[in-house]
Length: 379
Image (cartoon, rainbow, N blue to C red; front, side, top):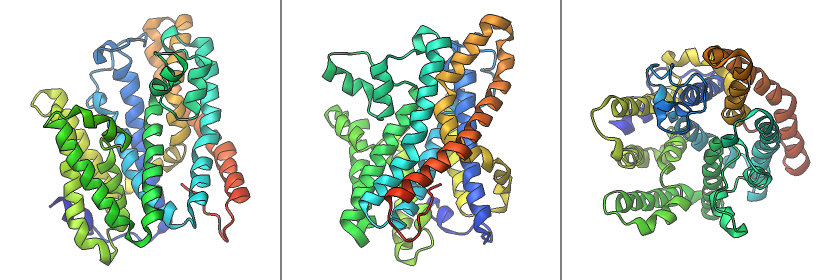
């Protein structure tokens, strides 16, 4: 049933390419809004049983589904699987693909990471402040906890905890690019075998407690692989040579996701919300790629989606630091009113970065280093 749901048309497809891209960008907006709500109503409050840094504490934790807003990151992974396949098919060789990914990620990361480092160093609480080595390693998208022992340190952290997903993305680019270029026209069959291996690895780690395999699985991003695979499947869903395989791959990926998340199976409110949220993002993604009429509401959100990368990089520790800093002036009891202005500030800043910096830098890199007849800007 899951495979048929994704493969079949749910409604007459909309032929307008601009509308389709707008809805995909709208999905990015849904993802970033969910992550923002999660961090500013739940994660940095006492409700999350972690670091309680927001001066208004958990007064907003009552918001339905706030504690599962992190699932927006998984929605980003679904989109990434589809978009990276598009990019690979439009790129002539691995060098061009590498340059396009560098152009997409690092100029904006350097700018936003530097802004974060400066603002948090001035306004942020000590718990969020980073050292220069942590700042530099984070800009290289290398996991600080793995690099720290090399330099005799033990407690290095990401400049912003949200960067963990960039490390996942970079590994996906490397694995997918390697399989795509090495195996050429057989790449999808190899990807299926790779996914099957990760599926078995998941079973061994989750059910057989073979923890010795977990480091291997982490390198292979087995925890997130089925989301990327579903995105890849979405791009291939109307190609006749793959349809019979997708009827197996899509349900298997959904089962893989369930197995990965089985520790949160249960009937308390938090667990029920988790499964509802997970089902929602997968169903919304499926409906969006099929261009169903019910997803037209995503189009007005496309502007937020286009600016979502810089928004994602800036929103968390910089945002928390701004609220903490301003609360010393207006008082902790009034700090909650800063959430909406903070969101607007981040949105305006991210939109400016996208239009005036991210896109021009992307064009500069691609135009200078990628020698193709038509340099296609990655969305």
